[in-house]
Structures are given as structure tokens and as C-alpha cells.
Amino acid sequence: MLSSMTPTIVTRNGKVVLVTGSPGGRTIINTVLTVVLGVTEYGLSGREAVDLPRIHHQWMPDRISYEEDQFKPPAIAGLRTLGHEVASAPRQGDAHTVWVASDGTAYGVPDKRTQDGKASVPVNLTARPAGR
Image (cartoon, rainbow, N blue to C red):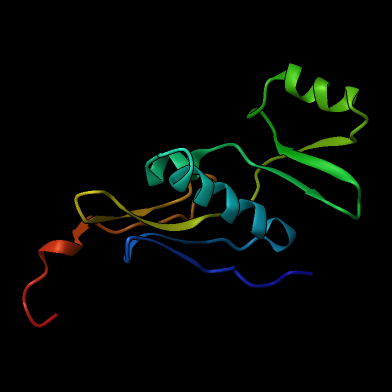
């Protein structure tokens, strides 16, 4: 059983663009990967990346789980047609994320999947006073 958050820091040209992690046992890696790919490969904001639908597969059991009401029936039917066992789950993971916009402003991005998600006000990291 996986039991850490897999804290992940992503930089671009030596500057932090994303800090993320998630509790969730075996779904941690897929949750973190979804957020990281959303920002780095698809150019999404932190909010958009955290809100992406999530899917999970592991070797045992050999089953794909997906967040209910997040995938269209034809996609689920297509997976079944390919021979996959699929099952819905109410939610997957709980991304704890800080996203840094191109202007240097850092945003705490709470995961709306949980009522405990919290975030602070934006802070511009490039406008810090000298000595900090």
C-alpha cells in the first residue's frame, strides 16, 4: 500500500511552476501525474489541471476505475469493448497544489473533490522585497 503524498516540484528554466501532491493510497501517482501533465503538456492553469477527470489502473486488481459522471458513456463502452474491466468511483485523490502563473503569481489551488480543500490568496513571487 502506498502511503505518501508523492510531493512533486516542477520547474521550467530554473523557476518553480508547480508544486503538487495527493493523499489517496494507490491513486496518488495517477492523481499527481494528471495535474503535472495538465500544466506541463497541455498548458492548463493550475485550476484547470486539478479539475481534470481522473482515471486509475493498477495491475492487481486488473481493473480501470474512473470518476463517476466525469467520462462519457461511449468512452467507458470503448474500454469494455477492448476487454477492460471498468468500475466507477465517487472521486480519486485530493490534489494539494500551488501553481505559479507566467507573471510569477503563485496560486493555492484547492481540490473541489473534497470539502477540506483550502487555498491562500495569490502571492507574486517575482515582486518580493529585497532580503527575502
